[in-house]
Length: 221
Image (cartoon, rainbow, N blue to C red):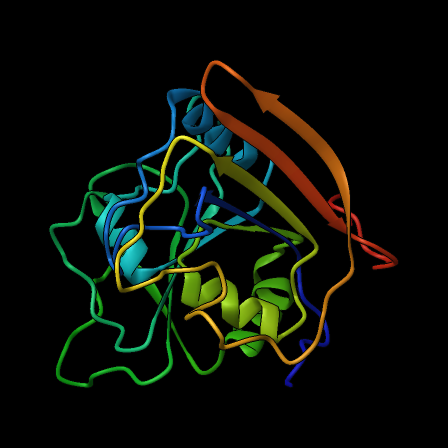
């Protein structure tokens, strides 16, 4: 397991259905929770130095990674194996923070949009680079599952914001979980403490927050 030496404090946000899935199918949009949960998503972005999302999630949800009514916008970071981005995606037409693109194996035939700052390499080095060269001390990841899995494998998740959506059962033959396919377990456990438990009977959702125990980190570092 490759761990980052000097990385930001990292939080993640995700919603799971009553049968433990984050989406109906791979690549499907995640806007299936309540408006209350969507407001919570935007609130969790406030005050964060950088937002991170996988390319598939960015495209499925048409995300612009901005914070309403906030003067200083967070960096907008996208992780993509190929480095291919749709130039017509709304992220390029919505004012916001600088766009950083991490690609492990970029296609040299595909040009990087001029407004994008490219990074090549692995996720661990990218996190270290954000800290060392872009003053990122806090980073918030909004999925998808493969990216969350990668952060978990780096042992680099300090806080989890989870919406348990009891109103939805996805079912189906292709389970999409927060850390990958069913049965593909992580190599080790991470100890987290439940710090928020907020059930909402009107939305049939429960909002939970877990924080890593004994990290030596906090969101102000």
